[in-house]
Amino acid sequence: MGTFLESRRRFIQLGVAGTAALTAVGGGLRFFGAFGYSHRLAPQDLPIALSAKEFAVVKALCEILLPETPGFPSGESLGVPQRIDEEVWATSPRLASDLKTCLQLLEHAPVMVGHFGRFSALDPEVRARAFQALLTSQTDVLVQISVGLKEMVHFFYYVRKETWTGIGYEGPFVPEAVPPESSKAYAALLASRRNPA
Image (tube, rainbow, N blue to C red; front, side, top):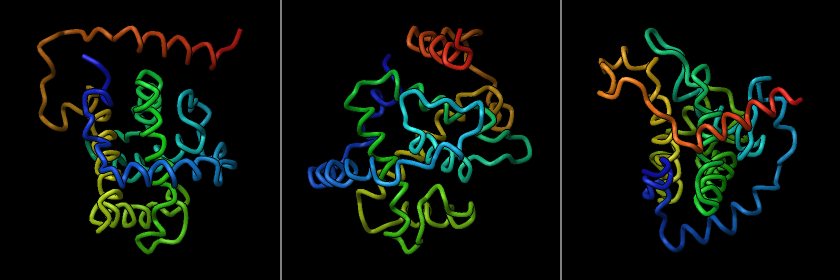
């Protein structure tokens, strides 16, 4: 069936100009301010495919899109950022590179909509306003990136059974989901890095 990123190609179906912009700008941003993000990660966070910076951006996005509310646990408590790291680890190098570039651009995009500061460093309320401004921006690339990242975060949240009662979903017909081999391999790698011999 393929991974989420492979099955949702429109996530980053940018025009030729947009792709060129991602390559030129995102490549440079990957190394701009790449240090100093580890302190934003919790002890249980262990980015494998994503950098500490990219993982911190995913966490910052989950914080504003998936806060804990009555009947719904937070996205972070359900491990959504780590699950996204797994998806990046399992997908093709091309798609992984595209997603990482999108995260790099999101981190530095608030200034383009009037909010001065990196996305992950903004206070949650300001960050939420900045993200809403990106979603409604006049710049197509920013809208496509923001919508794609939002869809991805929500997808990996609502596949968790802890959210099903709150949305009135009774669950799939298959009683027990069988994880793909890539998921088993990632879990083993994660365990070995968390508990080195």
